[in-house]
Image 1 (tube, helix red, strand yellow):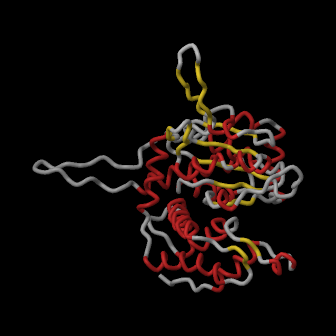
Image 2 (cartoon, helix red, strand yellow):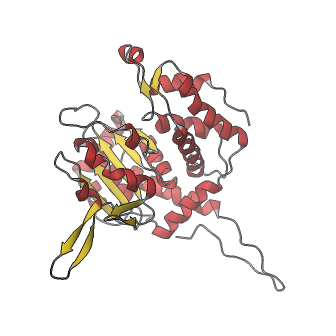
Length: 338
């Protein structure tokens, strides 16, 4: 597979400036990656696209859906698509913060401390059923998700790059769970909802899973597997996606509109504005464009903000959801015509 950047070309008398990124190569790599994951997670194309947007934007994802919809399968498939390290933590009520981040152990015979790094020191971390652990264990992810480092015994230890957390939770079963605090929810770039597949997709999924085809594919490197360096190059392209001032203004106005709505008791903060612009750029790159459109902002607005807002009591009584209220707010903000 070719690298994203093209080699420099020189003339006889002078050296030409470094050429720009190879957008076509990036588009081809992303298309192959998307097709590979979609062959495993059948019938969830929108979910796959949103998770790929977060991967390109170097963000974290909170996956929410009832059991059996493929949340863990999605993460396993994504882990097989690049040559990085993958670790999984099963969150339980007795899980301690040190089980997540690591800890220092004192060796009496050698009179020294040894740092044992936890499972967060990886490229792709699956935090399975994150809301089953108590708040102190959930908080162990705050530093590493924001700073991409862990402080153990006063020493800041960086995680490998790229680093991405994909956390799952069940929205229905509430017994024995601990709701994520607002500070931690704000660390996730996107909250992605997984719903039931269509009839045709479920037929194909049942046939593939019952024949063992999905398990066999996960046991070997998937077609189009990226190297760590190729993934870093793809992520480096996201800030280079052109962003018109009107598109930037539109994204910020959407976020600020949540602060003026009487339907919300908690509005989105500045981190939502930053995240929305990152996600819009990544969505444009995934679509094969070198520039972001208002449609990219609109497509990412709900996944970026649904976990950052809280409904007012009246809206909860009326049976509204964050998605329905956000959709109304988005419709009320005029989009620029470019």
